[in-house]
Image 1 (tube, helix red, strand yellow):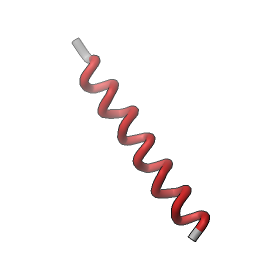
Image 2 (tube, rainbow, N blue to C red):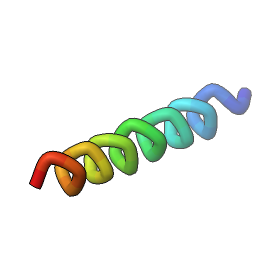
Image 3 (tube, rainbow, N blue to C red):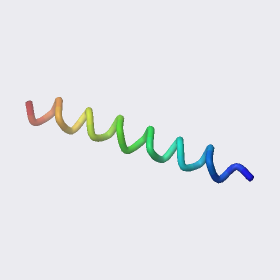
Image 4 (cartoon, one colour):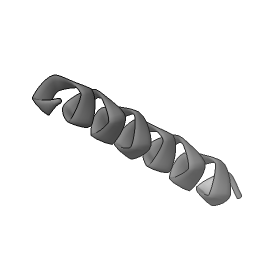
Amino acid sequence: MKLTQTHAEILKFIIVGGINTLNYYV
């Protein structure tokens, strides 16, 4: 089952997106 890998990639995408958003507003 690659469910864990998929979740890891989704979390990574969310974290990277959140960091980019914070940098954009800061």
